[in-house]
Image 1 (tube, helix red, strand yellow):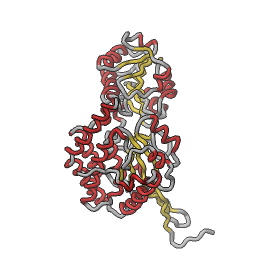
Image 2 (tube, one colour):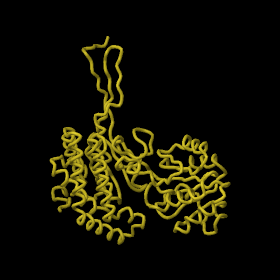
Image 3 (cartoon, one colour):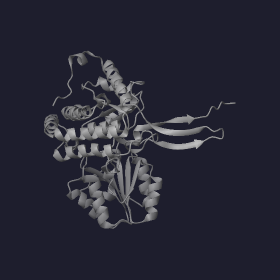
Image 4 (cartoon, one colour):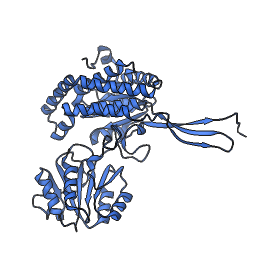
Amino acid sequence: MATQTLDPATAQETPEALVARMAAAGRAAQRQLALLSDADKAAALRAAAQALRADEAEILAANARDLAAGEANGLTKAMLDRLKLDAGRLAGIADAVDQVASLADPVGEVIDRAERPNGLVLTRVRVPIGLIGIIYESRPNVTADAAALGFRSGNAVLLRGGSEAVHSNQAILAALSRGLASVGAPVDAIQLVPTQDRAVVGAMLTAAGLIDMIVPRGGKSLVARVQADARVPVLAHLDGICHTYVHVAADREMAKAVTLNAKMRRTGICGAMETLLLDARFPHNAEVVASLIEAGCELRGDARARALDPRIQPASDEDWDTEYLDAILSVAVVDGLDAALDHVARHSSNHTDAIVTGDDAAATRFLNQVDSAIVMVNASSQFADGGEFGLGAEIGIATGRLHARGPVALEGLTTYKWVVRGTGQTRP
């Protein structure tokens, strides 16, 4: 199985020329993609999923090379977990591509329809955004997720993965491309930038008119750079500072189970809980923190939290605004719902925040007053994921207030156009 390599001609191109050439190919492929039927696009993705399964040995071997390099370069345990593929995870990636193939095609959906008094019939119809650039780090599953979601929604994608996963990304792309080619689908609808030159990122960010939207997925420094430098619209979240508030009316066992899962299931994902808020009147706070500590989590707390367990370390001011992506958690004891809402308002990154309670009125207030992309009641914040939301996969989580919020999947990768039908009307 061949992987994408940097050919001599590409090596001589400037980053701007490389991006312009790949963007032109992507836009041409996107026009071809528009000619495919719903059934054609679904069949192409099913072929791509099957190619991922067939190339399991090659993809896992490529991933092993990336893991070895990551360990040698001192990647954290959480970053290595993001990078790692095994047979089960790769099967999950292929299954996600299959699931995207089974979803309804959003393109052509009529959002609404109205008839004007003069007889004009107006409809708003979903259309693809066009060419989407995805800049990401560490996670090779993004290569397949972004490719599948872009293709299904009629978009071409230009992928720029991180150096940590370079071999994994190349192997996954090769399988996807082979699957598309086997059914005659436009292969250039999914492209991977064939160089790790960081200047290419800058060229993508300033490629207004060539790239229609940028989606960054990675650490805070990457997303901050993209948001600061982009001349292309950006869909992103900067931090995943997710809170779980254990209300006084929470069930004891539910509080322990939800908080433990929210933090420790996978500490390196953006939906992992980073701050635990404990109601001062909840009688089982000591049990909640003990279960986290005994699971291997380092806790950093305020004075009242530290009084619950001597193993809790003092929290600094920075801890309340830190996305650890590791087995570290900040803990505060608060005086009721109002204090919890105030803490969330000051420190949340508007990604995912949750309350554990048996009080419907408290739950409703929390849902109404927390202005995050995802708010939850009695559930682990680790459910903040497109696949768990039934979206097949996600291209990322958006925390802004325009276009799309939360897990961005097929609908979030479309815009709309107005279609006006008349019978010869002229404007007076």
